[in-house]
Length: 274
Image (cartoon, rainbow, N blue to C red; front, side, top):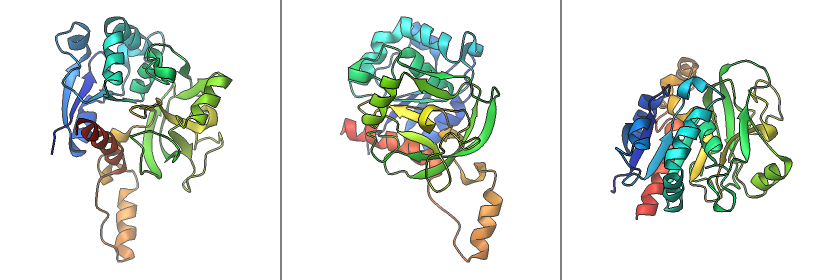
């Protein structure tokens, strides 16, 4: 089986790099943490990697807005390299602060192959507060997103203060028409949250929790899949295990939901190389 290599960004306030690298290793990839400085100074290059992961945290302290300075720094030094990486078939995932960086870079939504223009935004939560909770999210079955294929409804943690997805009316219409609204906040039964708090934790338009580009290879989401890499990460895991025991069911096995999402990307990268 061909090894899929993942570049996991680290440095300058990013703080989910170890978890993300670990979750990708559980998903069957070879993950390497690389400092942003090594890329912008070209000590390291994107070539040789199949997936680029922008992780969560507070890059440059979220000064001037979440993900803004990181996007300026990387866009000015690596803008063309990033576009070529995507155009060459590479996969990209942006998680929380990484999602904020992607939209500021213009890698999302990527209309008409344009990976430089900023068209959408992630702004302050409607509550005006930082939100740290677990939410239900559901995958859009009509989406071309490689990362969400085969998924239905799952629980993931959120922890952000600027997670409200918004865009102009025409861009929202285009996103939904093309299925780029890949992930949405939902009730446990999979139905959209309808803007209701706390199911929709930030007030995102149309309950959008994650979007992809038209190819489905570039994906950004506010929830943290890497933070649900083992069943004991869930706050109710002891209750769930006891319920299984009382019903005479065997303990749940298999990949945790967050790892399954990442594995979808790894599998797509492996298909591309094949």
